[in-house]
Length: 147
Image 1: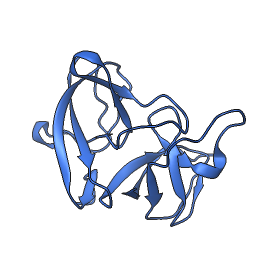
Image 2 (image 1 turned 90 degrees about the vertical axis):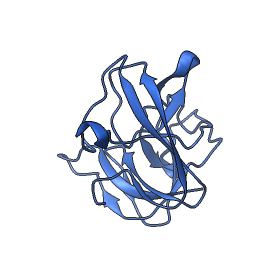
Image 3 (image 1 turned 135 degrees about the horizontal axis):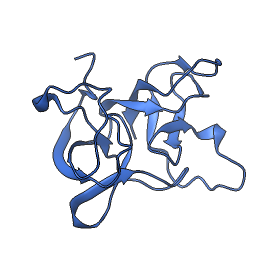
Image 4 (image 1 turned 30 degrees about the horizontal axis):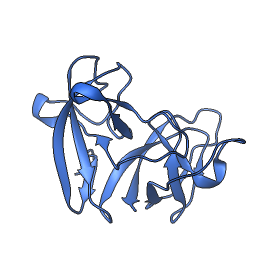
């Protein structure tokens, strides 16, 4: 279960087509027309809790990139469910932090909202601490609870 995006709680799974070639498991997604998805692109903006899941049926894991025009396994977790979401590098996350869309498919701490941006929705609460502020830190999958 350690390498699965869905950790616990109720969820629905669906399949969409990748509209871009930059979708990783754990990314927050937005549905476009004609059954396609792309990383959520509005920092702090409204979003359905919709995450790219690893394509386990094809032998893929949580670090396998989806390619454009190919099927994407999508998880739609219920409120209170726990998932492993992609946290943006540069973040210091403490358990209980409110997490928002970073505007690139990743999540970030609500208090790190860029100047001039408006917070309209908290997506999740951090369920584990991560310090991604070091010089070698990269985007990291981490446990979160959907609000």
